[in-house]
Image (cartoon, rainbow, N blue to C red; front, side, top):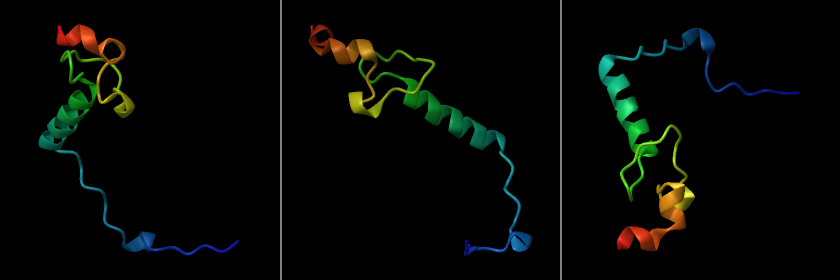
Length: 67
C-alpha cells in the first residue's frame, strides 16, 4: 500500500485554542440549527434540512400554522 502525505507533521502548527468569542459563535450557530423557522421552538437536536429547518409538527401540519 502506498500513501501520499500532503504535509509534514513535524512542521505543522498547533491548533489555535477556542476563545470565548469563538465558543459564543459556535453556540449561536448550533442554536440556529436547532430552532424551528416556523414556530420558533428550540429543540435538543438539529432539525433536518429536508424539512426546511421546520420541526416535525410544523412539517406535518403546515396549514394549521397559516390559520
